[in-house]
Length: 58
Image (tube, rainbow, N blue to C red; front, top):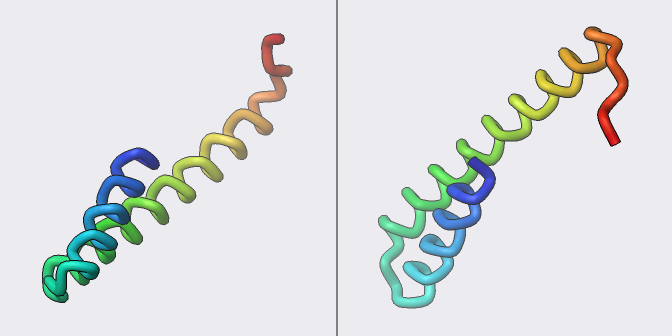
């Protein structure tokens, strides 16, 4: 999911350079949304693993 966020961010930068403001805005909005979903899922995963009490495998 983080890869998709980076992809949309790069699309937004390229679109902004070429002057496509609408596409750049939409792509940056999608990238921002995906990034926050990724962070939320990461935090939920970390909390769930901490509550489970198992140590990570090495």
